[in-house]
Structure formats: C-alpha cells, structure tokens
Length: 490
Image 1: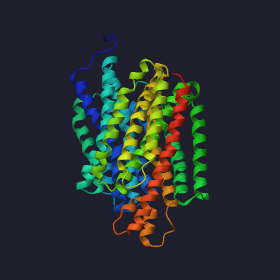
Image 2: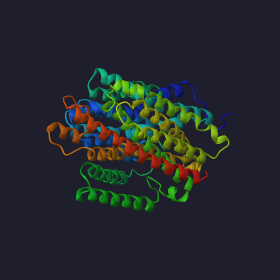
Image 3: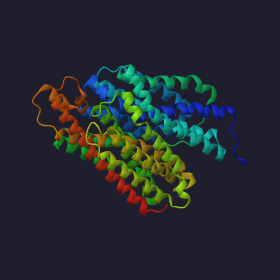
C-alpha cells in the first residue's frame, strides 16, 4: 500500500516508461553492435588493430568520464531537458560516425557519442525515480528499465548482422539516429520535467582528470602491445598513474566530491560490489569482443551468422540475471557472486580450448557459460552497491556503479584486445610482403581476400592463440573475483 508521501503512477507515467526504454535499449544495443562490425570496418577503412580498439572503446571511456558530471548538470538545468539535448547530440554524432571517411573522423565521432551517451543513463534513471514514487511500482519500473538494457544487448548482434549483410558498415550507426529522433518526437508528450532543489557544483576539472588519466594509461598499454615496451608507452602509463593519483587526492579533499571514494574505504562490502561490477564487465565484454572477431575472422561466418551464433550467450546472460536472487534465499549474496564468477572461470576455460576454424561451437559454448555465471554475479553486485550504503547515499552509490560499469566495458575491449593483439603479432613471422604487413597491422586482415592460403592459416592460428591467452588472463581475473567475494559476507 502506498503511504501518504507517495502517489501511484498513472497512464502518463507508464507511457513515459515506454519512451525511456528507447534510450536504454540504445545504450545496450550500442555496446554489442560495433563489436560485430569490427572486421568489416577494418577491411573498409584499414585501421591498425590499435586504432580499431580506440574506435570501439573510446565511447565507453568518455561515458565513464562524464557520467557523474552529466548527472549534476541534469539536476541543474532539468533532467528531461538534458535527456533531449543529449538525444539530439547523439543523433548528430551518429550521423557523423555513419558517414566518416577516415579513421580520425570516426574516432572523433565515437568520442562525441560517448559525451552525448553520458547524458542518457543518469537522465533516464533519475526521471524514473521521480515518476514512480511508490516503492512497489518503482521496483517494477526499474526492472523493466533493466530488461530493456539487456534486450538491447541481446538484439544488437542480430540487428547489426542484418544491417551489415545488406548495407555498409556505417549503417549500424543510423540506429543511433532513428531512436533519438523518435524520443524527441514522443518524449515531450509524456515525460515531465524535474530539477533538484539543491544542486552540487559541476566539476569539469575532475571529469577531465579522470578521463585523461584512464586514456593515458590505456594508450601506453596499447602501444606496448602494438610495438613492445618503449619510452613512449612507459611515459604514457606513468602520466596516467600520476593523473589518477591527483584525481584521488582531489576527491578525498573535497567536501562534496563528484565520486565519493570514501565509500570504498569505509565500507568493504561496497568496495567489493563495485569492484566486482567493474571487473566482471571487464571480463564479459572482453571475451565477447574477441569471440565475435574469432567467429568472423577465423571461423568465416558472416556478421549475421555470428550474431545468431552468440544469441544463446545473450539469453544465458539474461537468465543468469533473473535467476541470481533465487539462491540468496539460503546463501549469502557474496557467496552466490563467488559461485557465479567460478562459472565464469569454467566458461573461459572452455573458450580457451577453441583452437581452429572448426571450434566455433566450442567458443560460443564457453562464452554462454561465462555470460550465465558473470551476469548472475553482476545482478547481485548492482544490488550490493545500493544495499551496502545508507539510503541517503544511494544516489552517489548508483552513480559510482554506473561509472564503474562503463569503465569495465571499455577496459574489457581495450586491455583484452591489447593482450590478443600482442600475442597475435608475436605469433607472426617478420613480414616479407605487402599483404603480410597488412595482416600484421590488423588481425582483421587475416580474413582479407587475395592472401595466400599458407599466410592466412598462419594468421588464423596466431589470432586464435591470442584469444586463448586472453581467455586465460580473463579467467584469472574471474578467479580473483570469486575469492574476494567468497571471503566477504554482505
């Protein structure tokens, strides 16, 4: 029963929820659709492997860096207004990406997409909290919101595969035009406006500092993977670490920090939940990216076929999320999370057994097992983030969770892809011909036409080894998360 301070949502609020499902689904879809397009994009624009990784993951880094800032901006100017501004900017950046004629142009478009995308998540969840004040209705609304996020991730490979079969690689970005336009047309009719009566200061310096620090470190890691350890790569990592140190100091010294790191030190359960969410997505997204490349580059599937093949893994992930609360009736959530990460270890071990072009089913089976276990752990990690802090800190904790999630997704592609790249290049002999150099520059070149069969076989084996080694590394991360959660009761 609602109390005197709550009001049951009506038809307009439920229609508003349906409209807010659009950007939520778009965020989930955007996480998977570009992974599928990477081989075709590489053959068309010929980026190096390092450039391809930047194209894929710079979006996530920009979202993570600006998410908290955009949440504060929405409180100041109005959450609906920020959502509409962000949707318009997202559509414009998507058009720029779709018709990009060079690698730098596409990277810039993806970065702008990340800044625009940072407005969508906090705007949708904050509007939901204002539209649905009754606790029971709010739980249903948030469950629908999360289901659309997962549904977007599930249909991403199918929609992307369908478009890539019939159109050029840039067509996948046109989804990011259609959905925001629909939101802008329908949203003003059903979405109310809300502003916060007490608004914190917008801290652009902190947003810039965290984004610069992460990207400097990732740049150094990618350069080391591409051409070995050098003064440039070491200096980039050192600069990133120094920037991260300044970021931590700034947050600890400010009375109202943008990201309250004190929660990490004061509440162990919160720190473990946030770390599990970030690193769990790091593992799951990293292996997803590589499996989709493996299915196309080595197994030889078309984009649509690859999308259909990974559909069971997406369904397994949703099943894991929905079933995760069941064993918590008789077991501590941290123990269930630990078991989920153990299942992830098993799945990654199965993926690491894939060894040639006939092992596609094995790699997908391993990915499905991984997704089942890790998504179950992530569902409980999200709940643990909120449950481990006082109600008055729930907003801050939720924002930190969203930032950690985006960071984990981006790092999964960046570091997982860099490990695979380093192993791939080490597995190739010194280039003696132009086509061999093209294969060395980008593992997507391993599927190029006109390359001698023996060279292609060598490239396929090198890339497969890269996937195997990366799967083992990710399994080690999942095992570490299993131990941490098993030892922490919350």
